[in-house]
Amino acid sequence: MPKQTIRERIAEVDEDILFAGGFDGALIGVATQFNCAVALYDWDKCVKILMERDKMDYDEAVEFMDFNVTGSWVGEKTPAFARLMVEEPE
Figure 1 (cartoon, rainbow, N blue to C red):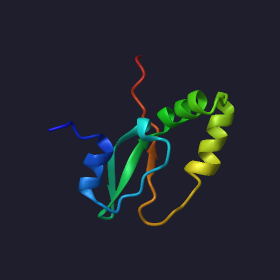
Figure 2: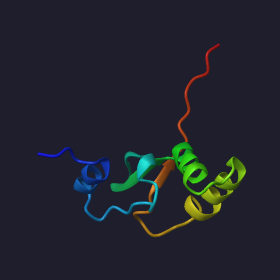
Figure 3: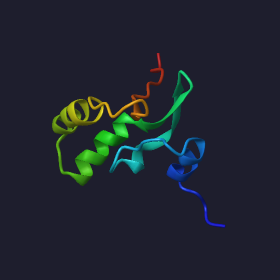
Figure 4: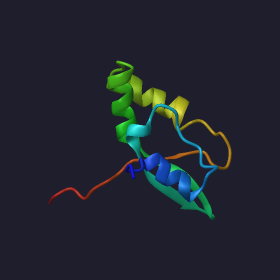
């Protein structure tokens, strides 16, 4: 049996989940809020995808993310984008 993609595994959680087109490489899981499951993406990986795929510089990619991706509402199942933080060493 072939290995399932993360997208396929997420779709098993909720078949109506919405995905952000072109960002499968940044898909990291599912977020749940108020019993609503949504696709969860790594924001920094999305920026990297825009820089590599679309040849944007960092500032252009961030502006695109802020306006066109995280600034878009497509309904209750709108994907979420996490900016992962880690503790900095002292």
